[in-house]
Length: 51
Image (cartoon, rainbow, N blue to C red; front, side, top):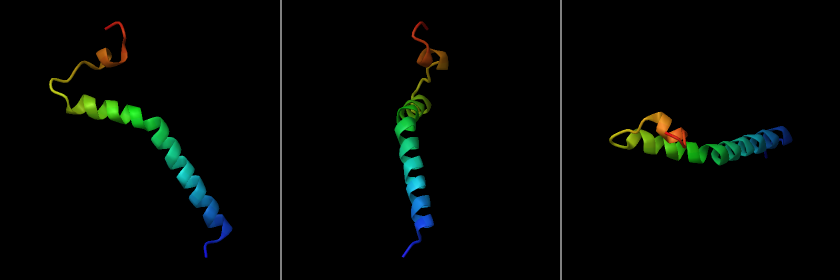
């Protein structure tokens, strides 16, 4: 049976993973779409509403 310290570490790792997925999902989708598209748009056009 895992010790309490091990359980706490597992909970912290899971929480960190959930946070990374939560805040990294949309940027990852944008990055994949940007790198896989042909022709590649200029990066400034992706981030600027005025470009």
